Amino acid sequence: MMKRLLGAVVMAGGLVLATVAPASAADGILLWTFDGGAWYVHQNPAVGCYTVSEGDPTSEFQNRTEGPVAVYMFGDCAGPLRVVESGGETGFPARSYRVLD
Image (cartoon, rainbow, N blue to C red; front, side, top):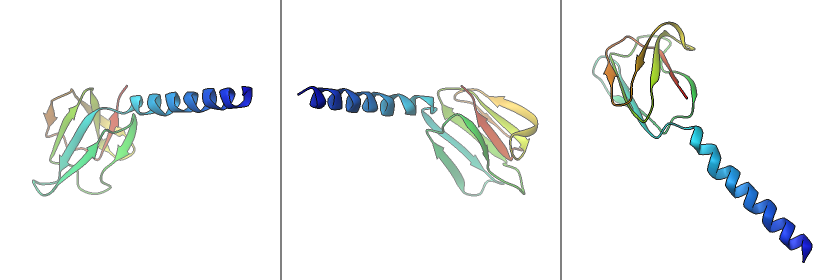
């Protein structure tokens, strides 16, 4: 009986951790395009840095998440940046972005 109870507690703890982990993601979507072409979408992005291009920069970047996102002129979140608040957009020429806490 005690082993079953311990197993249930461990499993429940694992479920709590699994539920908490996605909280570090930004709810919503990020969208960007290159010269008005196809739109790229990143849904519920986790906190961190993402490179979208090693070549041409984005022509427009939209933040439809609940928090701010920093867009950077170079890959690997390097160089000049602009912060795009929730619901905002920018024509800043970005090659990478960082989802902030």
